Amino acid sequence: MVKKMLIVLTLLLLLVVSTTPALAQKPSDPNGKGNSVNDDHGKGSSADNNGGNRNHANSTVQNPGTTISNDKDVNTTNNSSGHGFDEWGYNHTARIFNGTAWDWCIVKFDDETYCEDYLGDYANDHLVMKWNAEWDRGNAEGWAFPPYDAWESNLWIGNGSGRSGEVSHYKFVWVGPCVDGTTFPNGGYCIWSQFEVLMDMGVDGGVHYWSAHAIPSGYGSYPYPR
Image 1: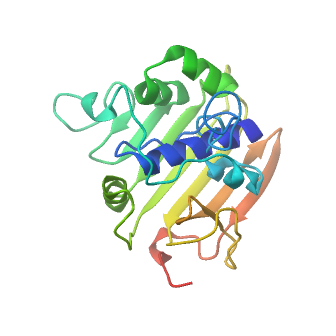
Image 2: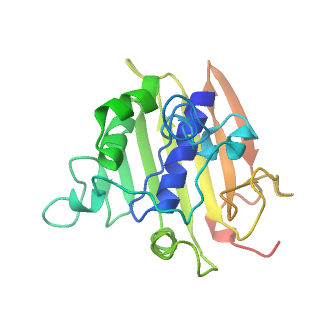
């Protein structure tokens, strides 16, 4: 689960950092490769959102405003009509990614060796990411002109043959300056110095866990003064 949590963190960070939603993270290496906090979505430990524990938030995660170079920009792989899903699982018009962790990684890094190392057992997991227009605006501006009514969800489905066997679901919203890893009174926790993880839950080893459950948990209630 730690590896998966790291991957999720990574995906989220990448999503925040680039105009191309990349919510997936890595296995258990903070910046891909093994296991990191940002790995969760990359399957490792990169998106604090997947973690079964809050330590993910403390992993090496890149700040939302950081620029990450992408050898292959997902925007260039969209179908010819500019609408609907492309071959990789991205629908930029609807702001949805619906595909495998492997497809997400290949589009983002265009490096099979790296993706094999980064995703490990999570490579075949199904990944569903959704975000709103404000999330795109924040990415385009480097999150430098708040406030933002931005949200994003990240669902990893590892059920089925050839998959990790784990399931993780995360919900993120922009809330303004905060200290990474800090728990908010409403039950969520801070990540990337400006975002709150409203929900961090899943199933690992047949056991259902909750690492965060903010009240209220609906995106429409944020951001709000703290």
